[in-house]
Length: 194
Image (cartoon, rainbow, N blue to C red; front, side, top):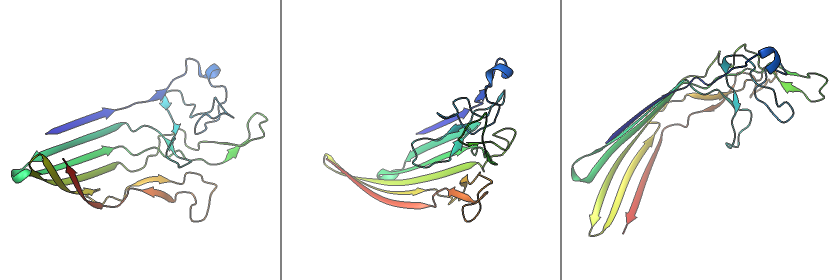
């Protein structure tokens, strides 16, 4: 059994009349309640969104222009199943933030984007290969499945996030790696069904 999927994306924002549609020309990471019209503000440029739900903050994403997913399973002799899964995608954008500014008399500062286009710079492409070997034992109507999984089989240490705020210094200062892919992980498992 096998499955292959490929997707491509060009999520861009366009303005009928940029002079009228862009109320605040300051290129900021994303709109907020304080600045509802903030954003990358580049006619024909990539859409930039803040991540949500991960429990992390300060993560801004531009959708990758490609993503590939492939997986397969081979049923070998003696009830042994061998499977693999690979995911590959373009790295997320690096929207560098140079400083905070106060616009139009606002008392609260707003982050600004340093690069002309938010997708001018990107993190490395991400590729993850996982593998599994499983043996199923049958006892009448019951089954015992023993499996061995290896995640990130190639032990890639791809950078997933950096510090983009040029104002920051120290151990988590500008350009410092904040997140990498998890290292290779092996897991033994057992499932009993009856």
